[in-house]
View 1: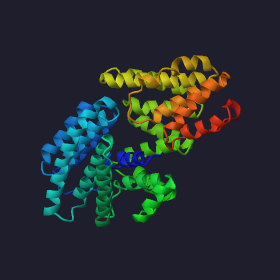
View 2: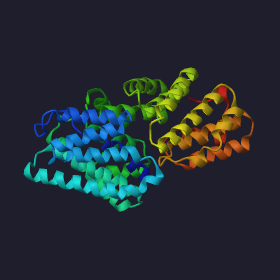
View 3: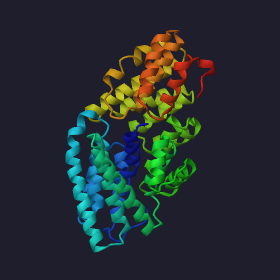
Length: 385
């Protein structure tokens, strides 16, 4: 994986849910309930309601960085996936500068305020994510490492905090699976990591966190499904998230995909139908993306049923209309298209698809399996999971 992608993934998780799980005396009464409500609405794709909740929080706490940060997070959550929305990221960076200023002002007044320190680090981390979108690697590293260091300092001041551990856990996980050069640089910087340590940090947040428990469970679901290939663990997490956020086409889509990884075709199709219904009232770009996602998963369900020709009718053409910034889903489209071609005995076409997946150069099983099937054609009966 390229180092830039590593940084992106780290701060994707580190910045989206920075809040700690202990009540803060610096908040107005009922504020934490409002913030939690806003987060749940955001994950449930109720964006207008979520914005209103975060604005209410800010009105109650105008001198605290929390509400301002979450309003930027909501915009990022809403627009982050789509390439055409990159023009708004400069505006988001300016708004994050405001979060930084407010947090720094509070820290001058209350030097030991670990909560404000967490939001300062989170804002710097999200600025790194935006700098990365502009290929500004100097500021990506500058803001990114600053964010990581600030959150570490906040946890040194208040080691009882749980939620910020997600950023550290994700960081340690991707360091642990990265190439030797990145591991060496991390060691020089004094960062030691391994998978067990990372899983423990993220699991603690998933089980005991408050504001970041959703993100922690979502991240564990992702790595179990698409990197570690522990599909039964991914399925358990995915079922819980889809049940809890029953209005989210994202979580229903992930559940459908993971059900297919576990061979549960009919149940997966029920969630694909639900995805389409839930997308009706969403912005057009989401409707288009969800339609493409449903088409891809329908194609994979047909391939699993032993209908590779019908699967190809749905899978071919999807890469040309791919709108997401992240390339994870694209890698699986190439992989499964190649697998369908191999089932039809069209080895030359299959290799073309596998090479496209490998070129994406990330740690997902789509790349690992594509490398395998470039050497030896995919055969259903003896294929690795």
